[in-house]
Image (tube, rainbow, N blue to C red; front, side, top):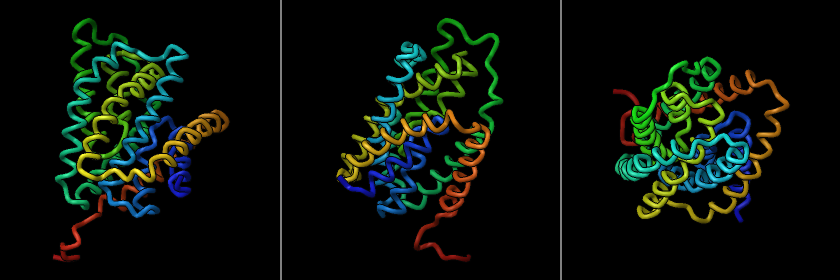
Length: 255
């Protein structure tokens, strides 16, 4: 087992557990920086880790009765379909463009963390078959983001499930964790077929993130949530700035 990947998984798990996110947004930059993986390989390898994060997280939420199984089942098909598209599209992009997209996604995640307490719980959510529409839509968008960027997509699915479907925040989070498993499986397999999966780092990442997520969840209960979210948002924006400025090596520094 590679020790560097173990520490990366541990850090990703701790930070993810602290603020209630999957580890992809932390693991991808760390794998690029310390394991020297290309952006494509970091994305592919992160998705395998997301599968296990979703499994353990969804099981934890399910034991507390905070998973909407029907909503997750409605998300599955569109998420699996678009995860394949996202992974294929990622492999068509040059690395600098993929880094830019990832950087802007980090900005969105940072803003969502800051605004999380202000997401209202709707008084009259959509009823009956109308609930199907936002669930299919959120699956499609989150699945594409998962395959493209190596993330779970909870930043996309949770607000939509709270605002339009009317799920309680914890139930939306538990459902999101369950829903990300099939799309991460499809995305990681698609990347694997393109030769981007760094298999030698997977065991360490998986062990690390599972241990780290448990530790992060325990630590989170002892620390003020506001400062956790604010600190993590600042770190994400700082990381994003390094990505959004990525450019082709053949592009002149000045035009």
